[in-house]
Length: 214
Image 1 (cartoon, helix red, strand yellow):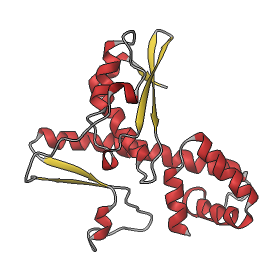
Image 2: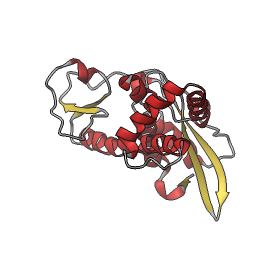
Image 3: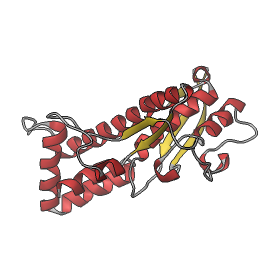
Image 4: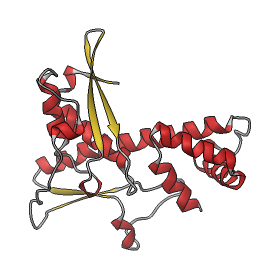
């Protein structure tokens, strides 16, 4: 049950799915009890008994979403740096678990993903990617830098090359262009981490000085 709950927490990020989990818990006491205990142990703490249950779930999901975004965003800094140094890289999300004794964890530590770095036998292989129109609202009237950012994001690595992300040009506010990035839904997971990776690529292509995230 703990592994199932852990996977559930990774998958749920969209508001609709979050609401579904909360409503399901309200109607199923045992699931609510299991989820509450899991959240208290991993995210909230046993001393926070007086916090509203639904608020606890909101906090936990938000923490996971933000954490996954940061891991992808800053991890991709390392990936691209290694590539510029002549090394080859690969994000590893699941298969590292198949090889025993590849890591030692201290108390409170967890592994979210690996970044493999070394000299590859090849320089990688090209994959079919989505179009700008499939993952954004770019048109002839949106800024040219926005389309360049989307094109750069489409070159970013994602779990099994699913590219479950999208970018929306929102418009101007206080003389600043605004862009919204969203993750899609995948039973494989890692969509929030993938979004962080794609956002870094978007910034490189679009120019971070040209917009703000909303």
